[in-house]
Image (tube, rainbow, N blue to C red; front, side, top):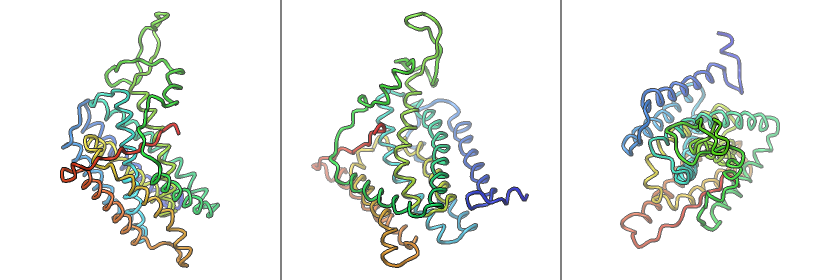
Length: 337
């Protein structure tokens, strides 16, 4: 029992183990029960799964409140909402990747499932390193904040452009370094087949594996924005990691719900831009006002306001009532950049 009380990154070991066990149980339930067989996930099923993961993510704030306080709870909820919203960019890129590799919808969940496992590990490493750096060099938070402000400005003013994934250098590199089949082989990532030149049996990567690699790389790119964003909300590694993972866990289900209506969120990127600039500016506002930190309750309320305006404006401009308005192309960041 004493072992469970040992502090790890500022929290008792049992709190970390409890969260990890919860995540493992959710993934096992998802793959072993809900999606035991390959099938196309419809919008109704996707919405139910999304509602389940969002509910669990929000419910976890009760555990945060029980073990910490109201300030930590507000920070967790803000971080969860911010991460969930920034994950929208992930969905745009995932849709692009699946379309490029022509991944059938019945196999897309399998790719996303293994992608999420990679994200859990990679985010844990990034957050652990980030927490260590911030603990030793607190001024890094100001660097994170400035980076978020510049990123938000870039997202806001950069011209919309159509992204051509076939020009991605990573895909060309992978195809040069790996044996890749042109066709899908069920839900397999790697298959054995005769070499077309020598006739010898060799291992070949399938388009599913290439799609998985691209999704993992894309998440690393997005984490460069999202992880610093949460560290400017709170420096508690437990809140940073749990909010990140709960936001990512429901990303698979959310993708299948939004894939058919991504065009309805064509203007959401402007809200994301403003949100990043607001999050980055909080530490400077607190410093200028002489506050110890920006009030977390205000942060949560302003976050909801920015996102609410962005979503509402997008739905209005792209809805049937605004049929004459030409929806803008949503900018998708190149995972290779």
